[in-house]
Image (cartoon, rainbow, N blue to C red; front, side, top):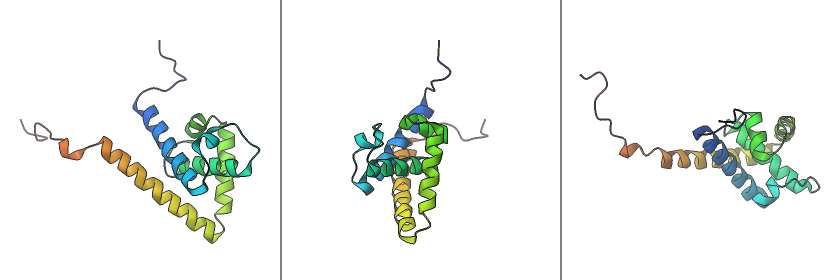
Length: 133
């Protein structure tokens, strides 16, 4: 029997991959390791900030719901909402806003490359034209 509370299939795979790419982009920008971002550590503000950035990117660019982001980061949905608000509030600074814009662009490129690899349009050759008998 399938556990209805545990999603399976392509949606889960892509959710995990989107979160992993968001973590990579945030880690590259902050020089924090992915292990630290995924840890339960709340003591170091640099780790918390990198985690907030990754969650923000996964939600905004990766279009994951707050609940999906929470699941991937092992956090509560309200924690993800707080993180999103925290990053959004900081975007009032033009310098920080430009940095986040660059991270968003980088994540979009990474996700596009990921999807392009997964959907090789060159190998897709329909056997019949639509509407043909």
